[in-house]
Amino acid sequence: MSNIYINPSSGIVEFNTGAASGDFIDLNLSGASRFTFENSGELNLSSLGTGVAEKFTIDSQSGRLLTIDTNFDSVFSANDVAGLPILEAYSDGTVVMGDYNSGDFALTGNQLGIGTTAPASKLHVEGSVTSVISQRVDTSTSYTFVIGDQSNIVACANGSAITATVPPNADVAFPLGAELAVVQAGAGQVTLTGGAGVTLYAADSEVKTRVIYSMAYLYQSSANNWIVAGDLTS
Image 1 (cartoon, rainbow, N blue to C red):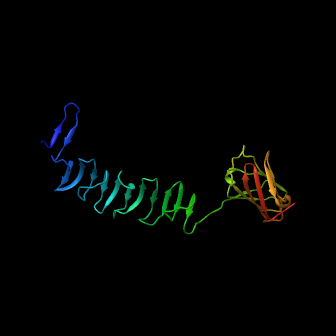
Image 2: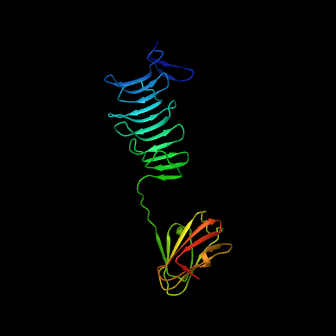
Image 3: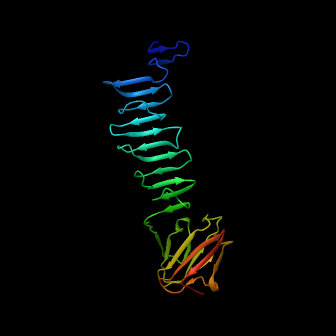
């Protein structure tokens, strides 16, 4: 059987060892395979030898860098120079990233884990977390919350009375569960009010900051309905 076969009708060029199994194509240097394409469909760019079971592999001098397969739980694997996975995708949709076997980052079942490969909620973090809150300083006597204020703090700094308005969702689409915070940063008390169709619920209907540095927190429990708490007065 010829090792090189050209099919005139299809234009296909085949390289064949003549064996029923083995390499269709084997390019090597000094007897060491560098590129092989197996009869069974595997493709390997390698300095580590042939006979791999995976559908596509790329090797370095130290170990396997990339693996793509269809027959095992792990269908894609990108490895470090030692051949240890740092990015792996599984047939069930799970993706794991980070140092080998550390669970640095895992996405599975629409849940994200950091420091764990088995997240129990939408975001599951094991270990310490650093959270930084931004502050917006406003010196006017009339302020309307904007989308960027969500989970941050607004410092209202004026010597006169201040009105801080929560806009309707039609104007600013705060998501359900959104949180806002405001601090009285000057002599002027801050009175919270709702825009058109917005209702504020506060204990004893107290929605005005009491003194300088008093704070108020707002939580959107349902569309256009906000619960207000803090160091407040009427």
